Structures are given as structure tokens and as C-alpha cells.
Length: 309
Figure 1 (cartoon, rainbow, N blue to C red):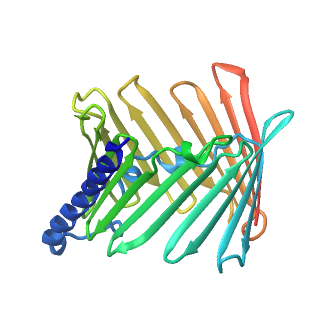
Figure 2 (figure 1 turned 90 degrees about the vertical axis):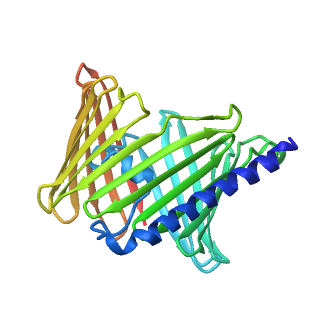
């Protein structure tokens, strides 16, 4: 236990050393690069699944209530009630507020589990620092595990991120040069003293489309490729392919009118998802999601959710 504070301090120094290295590199090259995408993005956003394949397919039945209040000047409250089974409902209350330049978010669910995160968005120019913790329901304060600490540094055409959680230190960086984004990430485990094989990613952004490739590790046997395109102002399409297991997915999202949209996707496992959303009033909406296993048409899920502002 006595080693944990020293270990935590050492890993935290690595966060700022990585950020400083990015700052020096970006300062030396910022005058020669033209940013097309409005600035660099994090590793997570570079390698994340396209929105067409990820968002808008929720099959849970739930009601979400968003409410602003005057507590502490500007506080946003969100209550979510989800139908878990025919006889049970899960609930979660989340509050977001600002306090002394800190963005604070806290939540509690029906099990009594409390989660909290405090973010200092501008601890120094371009540097954001977040600390998150969790206390499981029914446990004492002494049982709270070490917090998760994350840092994000943006300088001109580069972005560096680092996260400390338990014995793991995850470090990633992305640089943007015109139409091209390049990134890398790796993980250090202080318990075993081992550094994982790095992963690399690249994206080319053209006129209305983007092509992304992700290499997981150095063996070259796990590569993920994604393609996204805005066909017009109403239609977006996307596809992804992964060499590990020869997995693929294709999808499209279409705006029916100014208030409603429909989307669909199909993957190599035969899972078909369809999503529908409609804005009813300012800030309020109705969403529906359907999931069907085309290999077993009796295996399907359907959910409708309502968001109230």
C-alpha cells in the first residue's frame, strides 16, 4: 500500500511528460501544416466506430427526463428509467454542474452505486485533466478504488492523451497534416512491468468521405478498416471490415424530414438493426430500435424510448 502513492505520482509525471513532448513537436511544425478537419482529435475518436454504425439503435425501453435548475447557478439534471424486465425498472440520476472552473458530473443508480468525475478543462493552455471515481452500492468509503486520472493535451496539429487506471497507463497521440490523420497508442502495466505492442491508425479525409485503417499490435493479423461518406445532406453511409474473424458491417442513415430520421445496419453475423428517431418539441424526442437475428427470426428485440426536456 505504501508503494501506491509513489507509483501514482510516477505515472502522473508520465502524463505531463508526454504532453510536453507533444507541445514541443507541435510548436516546431505548426507553421507548415494546414488543418482541414478543424484541429486534431483524440485516439478514441480516430479509431471509434462511425456514428452510422454505432448510434441510434438502442433497443431498451426507457424514459429520459432532462431538467435545468438554478442550483449552483447552472446545473443540469437527468433521470433515466429503463425497463429491465417485465417486473423491474432500473433508474439512474445524473447531475452536471460547474464549480470554481471545474466541470463536475455525479450519478447514482438503483443499486446505490455512486460515480463521480471532475474535469479541469483548462488547467493550462491546451491541457485538460479529469479525475473519476466510483463507490459500489453497499460498500464503505474505504472500499473506493484508486481514481481514474486522464489527461488530454492539444497543441496546434497534435493531440496527446494519457489515462491512469489501476496498474495501467494508456498513452496515445494523434497528429493531423492536411487531409491525413496519424495516431498511435500503447499501454504500460506497472504490475508486470510490461509494455504492450503499440497500435497504429491512419485516416484520409476527402471531399465528403473518410477512410480509416487501424492496426492492432505489430503482428499484422488484426486490422480494422472503416469507410464513411456523406452522399448528400440527407444520406450518410458507412462500412467496416476486420481481418480478425473476417467481420464486416454496413449501414446507412437517412433524414426523412427536418424532424425525423431512419437508419439501418447489417453485420456479418446476420444481425440486422433498424433505428428511428423523431423530434417532437424543442429538446424532446421519440426513438425506436429493432434488432433481428436473420439466422433466427424469432430472436428479436424491440424498444421505444422517450426523451423529455
